[in-house]
Length: 254
Image 1 (cartoon, rainbow, N blue to C red):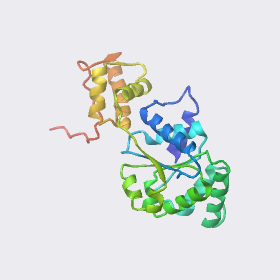
Image 2: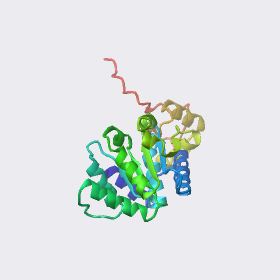
Image 3: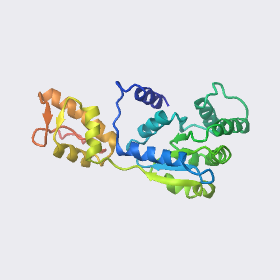
């Protein structure tokens, strides 16, 4: 939660933000806009899913800031009550009180006052795993507010086991791995003083499996490599630094 809040604060300060406009940001905003514009008789769940490191949370925080949407990221230890407390704080209730039923009714009432304002729920897999996804469905049904569920790659499969939620999904949007344009946007953020040849950047992207987090980490390392070797540009001929592929570093032979 602290990391999410730091990211949200940074993105509200454009001159300081470490933000790259990746295609997954556009994909999530398209999903949010479709839910906002839907007819009231259509279901209001949208699913944004993909592997860890694809930039889903950063895309969610961008959407949150653009639409002024409340956003919660479910923790491993959360119960139904803890989830509702965080939702209520996000929608303006400083000190949520009452039973689970009381807090659910309050959340429905407030979200229903402005049904084009989406509720964004990150780490939504955990709501299924912990057995309170039906609570989220209840909030959806009675408030009519659009709800974006963001989770890992298996989220759609998990939701297929919960028919009353599954058949309320308006659209499913898979997060995509970074392409070369995305990698270039990340380079502008994480290596702004460095010129990186497209062939090298694309090789890094492929070795990182298109995972935005690994590409970003590698770009930070490339910046350090260039600084240590006195380079202001890198290409396939002069870069011999580490690429964060996700594999652990092997121990050197004695």
